[in-house]
Length: 365
Image 1 (cartoon, rainbow, N blue to C red):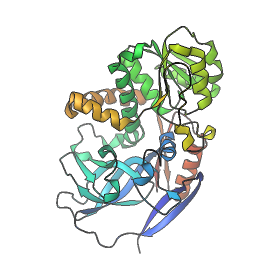
Image 2 (image 1 turned 90 degrees about the vertical axis):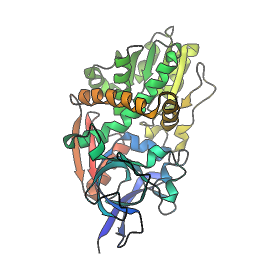
Image 3 (image 1 turned 180 degrees about the horizontal axis):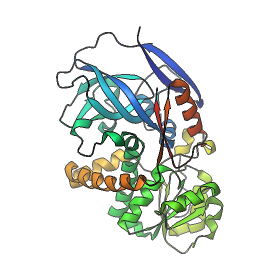
Image 4 (image 1 turned 180 degrees about the vertical axis):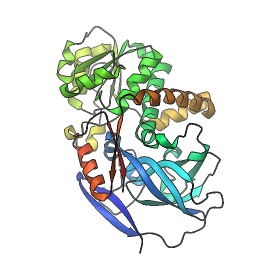
């Protein structure tokens, strides 16, 4: 009997994993579609999804046994069976999938550009998370760029929305933006967006081993190690976008700049080893300067869609993404990892922060 393989993690200990083997469905109900997952990106963003699994609902995307979780990841799949008249076998799609070989969805809200997974367990989450894009209708789709899109498309959207929030608020009066975890792909995307806009200087904060890489990118105006934050000019109005999730770094920056910290947004949690739990989403409210806030991308998407219209919002985002995609050609090295054992090893390396920042990990169960 054909099997479906899925990598799961313990919700209370993300380093503990298992590969669950389940029989593939033999019959589909009306409007159900079976996807064969081809390839997915595995980055530090996926660790953020685990961290926010309960608070932001990521564990609910793909339910499983109590105590275990299926981390969502962006990637490509093919329709291998379909009971929906508007979804054809052989169609190529892109969306949020578990680390698995297959996924059964309840197709609905069909349009020329997307399919939505209307399974009851997904109804309570932002529509953005249940949308599955149809490759044939994507004007920027290139088969040769599938891996690149899996790695940077979703994180670029997050960074683009952060920069858009800053721009629509006149950068909150800041003159520079501190970006933690500067070597991470989400941080690089944000620095690129800031540089393209030209309203703020970007200051990358990173560990000593990543300074040369960050400087080589050309998107940061300045790169500083975490232990040198106090060397920055405290009289300059700044803001901070925290991709690391390190309370120590966040506190150091706030205490150094005081009231000149004009905004403070937490976006990610690349420094898992300093948190290790959902406590990493907690932001201190008693620090000097702007009160740290957690940035929720779907909320800003909804706000800007209402203000600009969905078509205009997507026109701006896609246009800027094409520029970043070309920019990443110069530094992003893609590595493929196939099979359950290789996927588990890659996941453990990402979790422990043992990967080259220039590398992009693509997995196939």
